[in-house]
Length: 185
Ligand SMILES: CC(C)(COP(=O)(O)OP(=O)(O)OC[C@H]1O[C@@H](n2cnc3c(N)ncnc32)[C@H](O)[C@@H]1OP(=O)(O)O)[C@@H](O)C(=O)NCCC(=O)NCCS
Image (cartoon, rainbow, N blue to C red):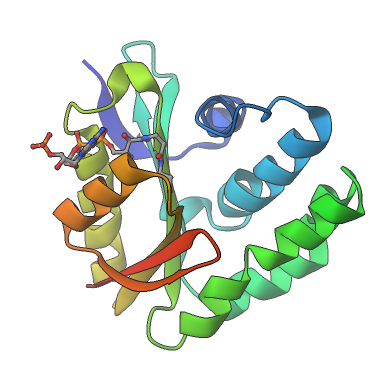
């Protein structure tokens, strides 16, 4: 039986695999892969592993995750110092695009200091695991007295938006094809 548990160092390759498998169609192109991992995976598991949880299958391999940065200032400093450069290895456009991913959080960090990313492999979707991952993280953040969490989802990701709305997230902005959503904890 699959289960949700705290992230462990050994999970990083599998978590990266989920990030790429649930990413855009061109996610395996080396330059795109470098940006996706820098922006949506590696910062969180390398700098804030205590704020990351995985859905593990029967063989203990990660098949889904929820990754979180609990404080925007801490995230932004490390992300710009190290991870924008990693994305930049895929070319200038990827480097710039990586920096742009921090903008929505920048605008709303005062009200919603934490932000998250959640992804689950297709075979494990729509079985309630996303809700379990979200419950695990929100309880963890409440225990740390974090007041609110936000996320950014593509405006075309209707399934994702439906999941977040059902969970209680509200839309705070819809701009340039992206929707920022937030949840008070
Ligand atoms: C979005 C995602 C995390 C949701 O996790 P999940 O385990 O599939 O969701 P749950 O089974 O907990 O669903 C809870 C509720 O969310 C909504 N929901 C979930 N998947 C949905 C879908 N495909 N279409 C419409 N509503 C959906 C439903 O209201 C569902 O409740 P119900 O099953 O009682 O109707 C997961 O499907 C996923 O990883 N998708 C691909 C990657 C992705 O889009 N990530 C988010 C990027 S911002």
